[in-house]
Structure formats: structure tokens, C-alpha cells
Image 1 (cartoon, rainbow, N blue to C red):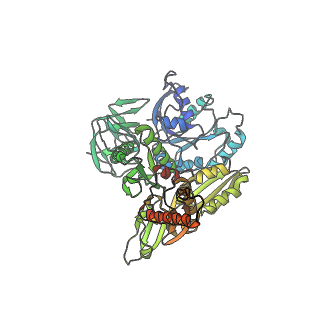
Image 2 (cartoon, helix red, strand yellow):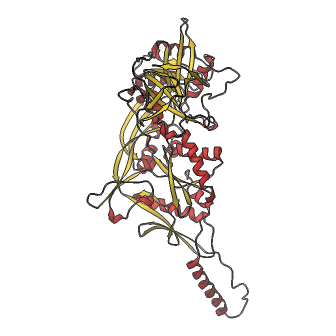
Image 3 (cartoon, rainbow, N blue to C red):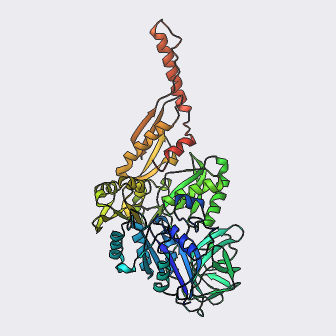
Length: 599
């Protein structure tokens, strides 16, 4: 065990984490030059295209130190985006040390700080690494000072490196050996292994990745998942290199995988503890929790006959991504579909993109919303969950609604404070903290409703600050809010797919926006269409699409005006009758355009 080192790399998006991992694999000859490709640990094309890690990865590296000792490194990669912070926390719990990677040209960003706090909570040894020091725009001295202020290390503790050129890789290797402690644990104790990730293989079922804290696991042992209480046979265990390498046994300190033939990803949960069924441990590893979706949206197939195909596609995706939840839903306007729960807006985008690429499934997404709690006025009535605007009860039976609030952390240049304050206050944010990290960097902390950042907050923040602001958030609590249900009506009939829960002060602006979008998008009919946004019985915005009209007076040239008037009156009656029997069909194209998340 003294020659094992378990560590991860934590960084903000785009600070070069995957590139640095590639150099470590090259340096230790884990991957041959012929097989090498950029972002070697990222499996999906989507990850390579976007330059982000969606799914965390683990790999075993063998390294011969300068003193001749041979070491086994377990590199547990972590996703960088805020939506996947629970996966990050479980990966950190499986390590003894972390490389804190900071881009020398950008400095410390919001997520660097939040992931660092997670690492400190897990008592990890932090090795600060300044990446991209070979770039012309690198501010090595300035960023080094930021790191020293942040974690209180000495200047000589900071390793200067470049993931692109391989500069400083030997120094990183030495730091891992010298500064990260070897794992501790008792191989003879009852088995305690932390599940930090799981993947689905269509031939072998769900494969769980784990780190053994205490005890020993042998192939063919009967194992138990502590929190779900289910027993399985360990058909195969092994270590994770570029491919899975089977082993006879693994003991305390080791990182590996186990195949049990489970076909449902729900049965293996990230953060659970594996133990031996015949000699179980007394308590599970702390920190386990069920992943809670933050954002909900309806997914509907464009053609109704594709409903079953969409169900199959979502079930297959759920095997690879246990944090996706879905349940059947019906909509008058869109037919049959599913109400899906996501970790955040990036997660929603990724699922949509994967449905399109991997299953050739194009879907319509309804307006995303978050979970609310509602309290009825009846004595003894309990709080109930509202996931869709349709769940909202009659106002006369409603005492209050609570919505989820978050703590938002924004790091930016002082030049943009005014614009950020205005944006946050438009989104009902309250400034709670303002700290100057350096003379050129400031950290702003706001408390704001989660529903307000679901749409376009991040994009607007980036455009206001020319990309200089970084953003991170964590859930805070539920607070009472004055929310109303906004209905969109076409000729008096509500369109359920377009209804939304909004704050009373925002209802009018949001209603006007949707009405004017529909006016542009709906095709004209033979009769007049009234598009209305209403809160309860009160109409707060209206647009009208005038009817297509035939020129019935074209054949009347000359003669008495009463002839023309008679024809126009006849047409007017016809239009009135048509309006009574005519239905306004909303084409699917119009739905897709109205519900476009970017707008």
C-alpha cells in the first residue's frame, strides 16, 4: 500500500485538465504514441467537440520514480461543470490528494474555488499546478499570488507546467510521490468500498467503479450494496487501465471495477458502499445521497407514433446516466411524452444532443421549470410538490408557494460590477458578499431563485462581461414567493405546453414576449386569431393575427355601393361562423421556435 497514490485533478472548465491527463498518460507510457489522441480519457465525441468532461473517468498508471521505486497511481478524473458537482464530490472522497489546476492566463475562477472547498472538506493534500505557463498571455507571478492567498501555500510549492508541451510533468510526478500520502486502511477488516462511478455495457450490464477503504474483495465473492441492501455475485473484478484488466483480488487502497450482471442502473448508486454479504461492515461510507434533479422539462416526440421509441431511448440513456429521471406525461397540444428531471441546463442540452446523435430522436422540449412546494389552506393539509404548471391548484385553496433559492458565486473584473449587479437584481437576486480577491478580481455572492438562472442567466452574464466572469452555484433552501400561473390562450383555449409558473412582477413581460413570438410564428387562418397571456381570469397581454381575406368585391366595378356592402357583410358572417367552428392548430415548428431555450 505504501507505493499506491490515489489522486484527482480539479479545475474550472477549459483550464486544461484533459490535456494534462493526456501528458501524464504519455509520460508513463500508459498509452502508446500510435493510440494517443487528444482528450484520451473522454469517450464521447460530444465531450471532444465541446471540450468538456461530461462523465468522470478513472485510470491506473505505473510510474518508476527517480529512486528506482515503482509506484501505482490511480488518476480519478472529474467532470468540470457545476451541473455534475455530486459526481465530483464522490470522486474526491475516493482520493488522498488533488492536483489543483489553474490556467496561468485566466487565473482563479469560481468553480476552481468551489471544487477546492470540496477537496478541503475531504481532507485532501492539495498540489497547486499552474498550467499553460508557455503562453504569451500567462501571468505567472500574478496568478501565483492568487493561489498563495487562496490556499496559504509557499511559492515553491506551486508546480509550473504546460499540458500542451509537457513542461513540468516530471515535477508533477515527484510532487505526487512526495506530497500525497499513501492510502491507509486495514486489508483484514470487513470490506468497505466506495462506488464513485458506474457505466453501462450492453453485453455485461452495469459496471461499478469503486475504491476500497478497508478489507479485501475477491472474484466470485457475494457482495452487498449497503444503502440499497441488495446482494449480487462479483462475477469479475479488476483494475482500470485503458481497458479493464481482470484480477483475482483487490484490497485496501486499490481502485477497480466490479461486474455483477445488473441490468438496471438504478440498482447501483454513486456514493453507495460495497461490502461482503457474509461479513458486512457496520456502517456505510459517509456522504451518500440520492441525486436530486434541479430542472424539469417535458420531452415530446415530433411525431406521436415515435413515443415508444423515445421511451426506449431514454431508458438506454438512463443506464449510462443515472441522474436522468423521467415519467410519462400527456399534453393536449403535444400528445404523449415524458416529464424529465435534469441536474441543470447543460445536462438538459447534453441529453437532447445525445438523443439526436445516438438514437436519431428529435424532440420538442417544453419550457424548463424547477420543483416548487405548495401549501393548501385546509387545516391539516400537507405540503405537496409541483413539478409542472398544471400541478398548481386553484388559488382559493392555496396558502403559499415555496421556490428553491441558490447561492450564486461570480468572479469577475471590477469593470463589470455595475452590469452584473443590474443583471442579478433583474433576476430577483440579493447581494450578500463582495470580496476583492486581488486588485483586478472581485468575488460577488448573491442569493437568488433557481428558476431565474434556468433560462439565459449564464449566457447573458458571459456576454455582459465579454467572457471574463465565471459562475458557480449551490442550493440554499426553499423560500415563499409570490408566483402565478401564466396561461397562453389561442381564441380563448389554453395551450398547456406554453403555460409557465412565473413571479407576479415578471408575468406581464414574459407574457408579452411569448404572445409576440407566437404572432410571428403562427400561420394566418381564414379567421381572426386572438393570442392572449392570462393570469387566472385577467388578460395581461394580447396580440391579434388578422384573417386571410379574399377580395369579394373584385368583380364589382361601378354600380351602387350597397352591392359591395352586401358582399362584405356576407363575408363577415362567414368569418364569424368559421371562427366558432375553426380550431387553431399550432404547427410543431412553431412550438420548437417558441420554446427555443436560447431566446
